[in-house]
Length: 304
Length: 133
Image (cartoon, rainbow over all chains, first blue to last red; front, side, top):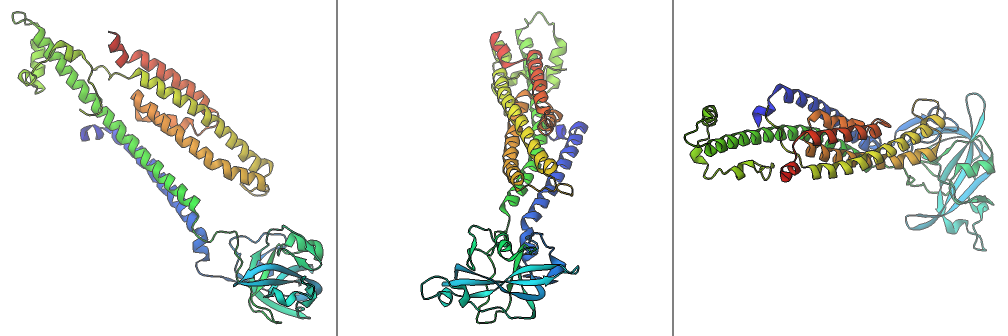
């Protein structure tokens, strides 16, 4: 079989197949890296990105690349623009988040609102005597210009609305209706809490921070494709080899039949006799080469 | 030049019937994929290359792409089966795989393959020929 494989034709095809396999290998590596993207990017922990105005444009989404990283912002809290987001559970405590609007001035003088999650407090502390959440019980934000620092988070998906200072989520599409535009499309969760509030844990975002198993799957698919090309080559070498082997055997059998069938006094095929011995198959090795056995096709071409 | 090995005509025809169905399904699946790509990147295209403004078409595209990938793999496997049964050379296997990746080509490729199957079965000896003798 090796001699068949070393023919120029098959060597050329092998070069082609190896090239295809190498391409598949590169594509597998690319998918492998993509699967680890989120992991490697977030492996070093949150990055300090500096001033929010240099990080995020108004209207741009908070992407996986920057979510959870630290930013700073300078501005004034808007009096009266504050919502309570109850119904959260933090460390087993029923919690209510306090979100206030920070007015930030951009370089061109535009006033932009940034939702700031100042922290959380037990829901009991903001529950009024009637058992309902009372937003007026939440601590007011500090007045005057402040500099804040915190984690940049993506807006939560809006399911409910904002009513009487109580919201179901920190959702900028809802808050912009209450507080007004323009507004950043994400929010900042403060690093250090004050005014009797506690620091918010990192949001459980829908972005994946671990392995992307879909990309891992694609990576293995490319490996399979690469192996398939090599298998194709081996398969064509093998079938060529087996075909040639079967042809040689049939040729020998045909010669032997002709020899046996010929009457001793009618030597019409001396050249055939010579060819058979030259091929190394002695007539005595064949116990019963009847014409029927010779004309029947080999029962299987799988193995010879 | 020795006579080529006999083909199994029944097995070849069965394999071709399967491959023909796979060709047509793959051809349609690829056209659907192209349609989705056009909607995602051209009709609802963003400013840059390969950017989009439509979440709906992104979602449709993300759903259909792996399904199409699976259909193509089945197509390749059935093409490989036919290729083995017909005892064709290696370049023809690559050609069969190529038919599946160019939109619309798989329909013509299927007809071309059908002609090759028919002419090879007529020209080359088959197991069934020997039974008829």
